[in-house]
Image (cartoon, rainbow, N blue to C red; front, side, top):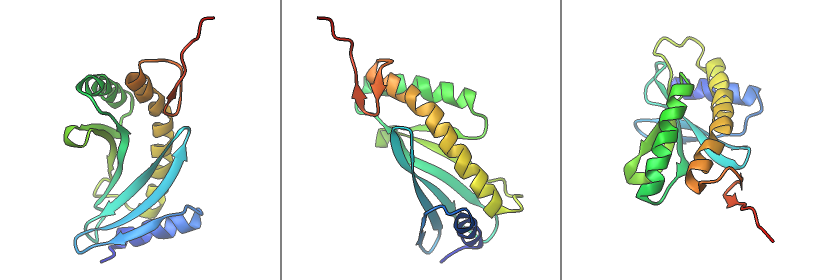
Length: 155
């Protein structure tokens, strides 16, 4: 079932030429937009569960880690990013070994479509600004390019 907020978000995305896809289920409808920012790619999901303004925005698997040591370093960055960014929340999901980005629309949001465009751009900006901090924590180096690490080589 497609909820009203999902329709408004898809209409706003159409107006701004943002490519997206819609998934419908009995209890939720979702608008997903794949984006590439800097050296990472991810999907921003706008999830609606009723005909009101109840919309959750999620970026699952924004950063993935493997070991307990990486988890400790990533948790420090999660806390730093949560102090730095006021509205977008970074959450470490231990059982998935990943970090997600979250935003929940206020229930009183009047223009979901227009607001979704603003949140979409804000999520991309924050993802771009924060991604390098997570990679530094994972790779333990200030020199990185995507998932490749560059070390100084002495001849």
